[in-house]
Amino acid sequence: MTAQIISIPRAALHEQATQRLRQMLVEGQIAPGAKLNERELCEALSVSRTPLREAIKTLAAEGLVELLPNRGAIALALSEADVRNTFEVMAGLEAQSGELAAQRITEAELDEIRAMHFEMLAAYTRQDLSAYYQLNAAIHRAINLAARNPVLTATYTQVNARLQALRFRSNQDGEKWKRAVEEHAQMIAALQAHDPQAMRTVLVAHLGHKRDVVIEQLRAVSAPLSSGQELASLAPSPFGRGQG
Image (cartoon, rainbow, N blue to C red):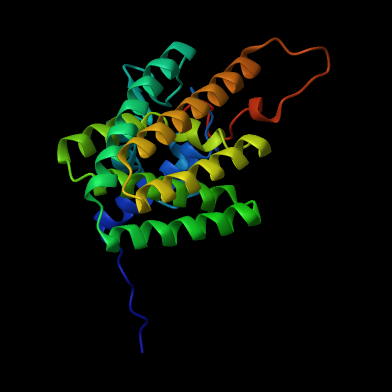
């Protein structure tokens, strides 16, 4: 009997490529400011150029990729001023989300957030940063959705996309990662108590700490390296060379 060839729909290939490319950008496998090499990315993602280009357009709309005239696509790179300005807006959006969620969240939503929180703690115990970040981001999205304000959600999603890679890297310092976990425990307690002010306070502090860590990291990377010193984070990205 002839083996049946299973054809993967184009839309599914586009979605898979988008998801995997997003993860590469967020987790720093593609360095900020690096040009996206289509040939190498097609090989890495096992897709043709059409779904890859569709994925790049999707991520450009999300804010993770910049499309430059005559230069192709590059991974988003934010200056210190960009970081300060974006985190300032994001802190306000997170605070409002938390405040409204504390008033409007259902028991079912609270149960789901608690479950994700415990999964996140398990990932933290394993020091699995990738799994931790995905659960962390899902918790913040769930809090935003529990606010039941579609305008707030649309704005939150747009602004947060610009910060995903930076928020991921902010957990690479052990002590600061531990503090972030403790702040998440405070969020759960505030939600359970339906305390809007407590949620606003912890989320503003949480985003402020994230901002400070990110700025510290940006300054460390931009500082001149002493003779013989190397930083792994500055190693050239395998996907950052000229487009093939």
